[in-house]
Length: 411
Image (cartoon, rainbow, N blue to C red):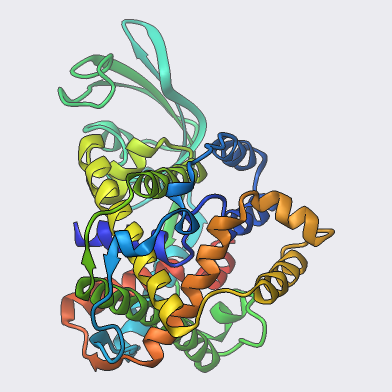
């Protein structure tokens, strides 16, 4: 649950993307333009429904004094995990790259455990081919347990161009109820048999990664270290922002929270998570189940709590902005619009502003940036060492986030 709340908090507060149609939406639009047609269509569909919210859903539509009373916000004590990359982390990352780039050589022999086979297969139930049960060319690693019990064992011993019928039974708890517990026949043909050997970290392997300025093992290790450290620092910055805002919000007193504002933040969370899910070709419910192990009623409750927290935090930040003279000026807004319009490739500021739509959410985002920076500068920050469990989890997350290298390595 901590993983879920951390991720959702990052989504809601890092760019205040819950607000109206804010800056994050424009950034997403820019990214979508470079994606596949399917992703573009999905993202466009997600963004197509524009809900009009009442004034009370925005900061300029409420009287803050009716909702929040500030507590201590300067000099709050917070702790963050030290941004650190060990030799072990570098080794783990490099090993994952080696494991993903094993040498594969076609062999003329019978299939054995551990081989990679290219197969053609057709699945039939009661003599009729069923949906999703056929492929002309599928690479399967024997021993990966990718298919139902008995399938991979049945392929062992086959040779190239050999065809064989496998009489199998789907598990009783199989997700497709039409196939659960059903007896089926898979007709399998082996197209190719490959033997894999471990990749070796040497200069030739590094050169094959096609990374600019990196051609030796030593350079590659430094490259991996730099990327992991960059990600670790980004994670630390996110953690610091989150912890400071949570501490300041905890010190405040809330008389109530505008329901319209919470509703707006909830809708934005759902909208952005749905867009994320669509990039993987799945719906929100499936995404939340796979990513966080939450059923629909569970994640809806957590999103509601996150929306409540986000609404409280934005009100606290606005109250601090007003007290410390950190409110957004018209000149600052215009400067940001001009800079962002150029950065994201818009023909004019007017075109960029049209893409944003309601500027109220955008202004809230820019205000939150100013206040968050102020709070961090005035906080008492203590760094702590990551626990073994946290370090392992952080390394895994960092590897996932090192997108530049991952994209190169995958080719």
